Amino acid sequence: MNLPSPNRDIRELPKAQLHLHLTGAMRPATLTELAGRYGIRVPPPLPSAAGTWAAFQDRYDASRAVLRTPADIRRVIVEAATDDAADGCRWLEIQVDPTAYAPVFGGLEPALEAVLAGAAAAPIPVGVLVASSWVRPPAHALTLARLAARYEGVVGFGLSNDERGAVVADFAPAFRVARDAGLLTAPHSGFYTPAAHVRECVELLGATRIGHGTSAATDPQVVDMLAARSVALEICPTSYPPFGVHELSTIPLKTFLAAGVPVALSTDDPLLFGVGLTGQYEICRTALGLTDEDLAFLAASGIQASAAPADLKTRLLSEVATWLATGSQ
Ligand SMILES: [Zn+2]
Image 1 (cartoon, rainbow, N blue to C red):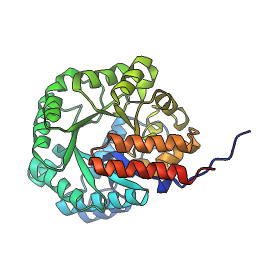
Image 2 (cartoon, rainbow, N blue to C red):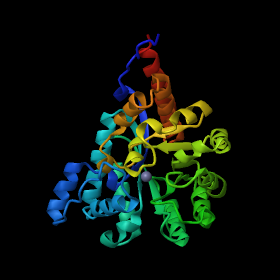
Image 3 (tube, protein in one colour):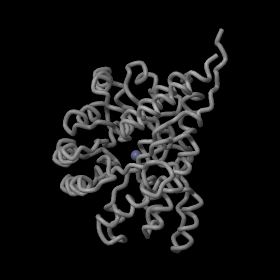
């Protein structure tokens, strides 16, 4: 006989959110308001059936167009941090590719500075990851890594967008600069690409975290390697069904949990996928049958894999343990 779930309140579980894109962090109402202000048509929502990457990117690019001033960026970050804080988030990392904002803001530096100013104004601590794109030249990634290395408040470097088609090794110089500057390194991988791509990101780029990385579950050797090196996967459950990558019930979280691979549950783009941080944990409970012990492990993994200061990590990990102990039956 199954014992009833303790049903602890997931909102109360202290969490770190490690995979959130600036544009995708926008509240839908803010998108509507800013689009109205600037005379931009609000793009339609993603179709619920399997969509294409191009359709996603079109909507994403159009949403980005409504961020025109430092005040717009500050508003998005403060609102996102407020929403995450209400979901129990105690440390937030926002990633941004400043390239897309540079033409409007007058260069890469002012674009990044607007993001850092927004992060500093948020109600919870917010670290910034500078992300180049897999679809831009490796030389540009190097430029952004050097930019990232110069700014206090930047905690990491990544590569976003569609990871298919690029040669992983070509990005090694950019990641070397980031690592030498003490930044954590978190490229997107293993979303469309196979487990071998995840392995290359760890071995050739020195990735300390992987954005998504769920395909790694198909190769036990890659799973073992991730566990042995404590490379955390930033898994965002609602990002997979719209693209036919996984159904919610087939996300291989139990494979990673069984192997001890750290997993940081995150939201990716709540503007597009409509589910916040607590909702991602709820999905793991309801669609994947994870226990509260599992959820506490995920929360602790996210905290440990974050760029949060050591004393904050210690405090949050202790609070995760308290959450689990308090609701036991
Ligand atoms: Zn992402």
